[in-house]
Length: 294
Image 1: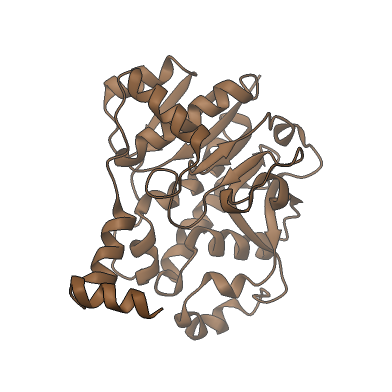
Image 2: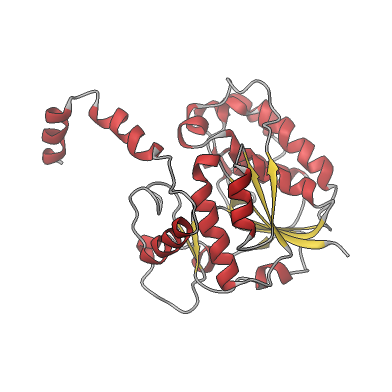
């Protein structure tokens, strides 16, 4: 019998944040999956052993399948890394797992979310919407002839912060290959890259998906004021829990991870990029004056 897996992934310098996610799963929904699959780019074996003491985890080192990454729009590399595209691997994992739930690691799980694994009506569930056009930059207008078969305004559009796939997903291996191919074809126009690509391919392949309500499973911590129905806080955008957005329950788990011998999140790209973008062009004094004028 095929197993069920929770899947996540990120750069090795973000691994402590992934560890905090694993702790949330162990605390709130330990029976939800048989194991957690973590895509990474070089997590040390010692750290892998440490995290397996919390929950059974399988580590897969991710290799970006596109050799020429120079064509991608600035937004892709400015806000993300190539690890963004490891979400495509979830389709190939359906060879091994009956059900897969992907979750980003910049979340805080408030309570059991096992019900997301139980849906059987659809081969996939995403947070759904419209306006796929917003997931591209201005270069998309040079690709409109190639996309005449899809509706970029009112057709299905999805978000990938959390989603579920079943092994009943039609031609999932071919869907994975299509993801890679379309990513290469539209690379210069992508902004929310993987979401844009998957949205288009779901439309093209006429695959019906279920809806994950964001008001329950994707609430920003700044908008959270309690509420029994809310199950996941998602620190979408910047800052994150580890670089400026303080959320005490998340910090408590990070302290527990450090006590186990783990490290803090090293990467502070958001703060560094903000410094480069906002301060250096003006000088520190000019920048402070500029802030006062706002």
